[in-house]
Length: 450
View 1: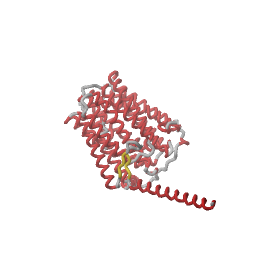
View 2: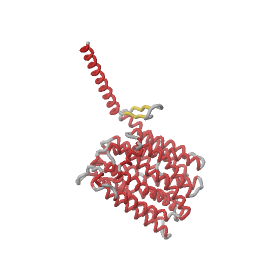
View 3: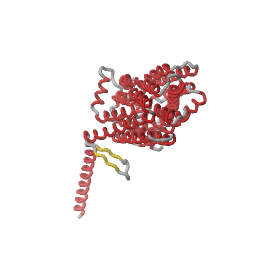
View 4: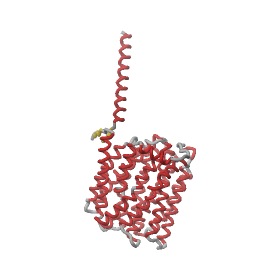
């Protein structure tokens, strides 16, 4: 089997991949429908209101993530996922019923967004760590990359289908379709062969376990640096739902179909990045910083594009670099964390990555209204470039990092710290000793023969 799809040889992961793919398509369809409902259909809707909805949806990450991570370290992760996925399906069905009966108001969307955020906050760290139960540790980078492939394959299909359905039947039925799609994930979880799952260590009950997770992260400067980078980029740069909506409607004067197409084109680049990530064995902090910088630069160029077609074309590299940064950060944190701490560490990672969105989204929405749609893209570009440059300078000074670039050899960009250089030097010394010993042995054998 190709290295890209290596994890699909495991029965449980195959079930998970297919079920998650169906549910992800429904989720992306709902995201587009929800934003368009707020921006263009409900009274009082605006770019700022879309930012508020997005913020409310991710606000629970800031409050609940540490405790959700502790639950992920303590409880049966498969059963927890069945509960959280079922809750999100019921919420989608409830909002769909309100929209179809013409009873939906803006405050209803706010409430459902907040409740969905609660369910997602409980779901996210469990879903992230459950991957390690389905595949061996050596295949974890591949499985994380394939998860991103599933997510972005759905992103490729979902927005375009949602745009067409909004134009044809309105957004209400899209919420119902999303509610049904969660059944695929629940069904795949119930069919799994539990005896084939890898038994990861569970945290024992005790006091101060959330503080223990925070203390663990504080001792890890590499994880802290990743959290800073993904937090800033997530807050100001990864607001594609909002920025695509305001760019399509206000900058180019287009409708729901063109808005959905932007999401699908963005997913082309993201899917390419996910497939590349699935082949990568050992992502490092340097890749996170480099991809964040490339993301900011390409996003800045995109903000200046004069036509819809050119703007859409730039969605491909923007999607590629954003996905490369996310998967490199996710895999680096997971693989470098002790298994018994992984749920709490990943919950802090998700809290920073997704929880900063409630802070960034309303700001980006306000920028769009006050200064124009293009500046809502531009602020993300500026923030991403600044945090990437600052992180690189800090790493160079603190870790004494050396940067090497080669056009002819892979990886093209390598950022080495003292630990990597010491390991290479130790390998070189050991190699020289082995050669010297072999040479001495051959010399003795030669003299004995003579």
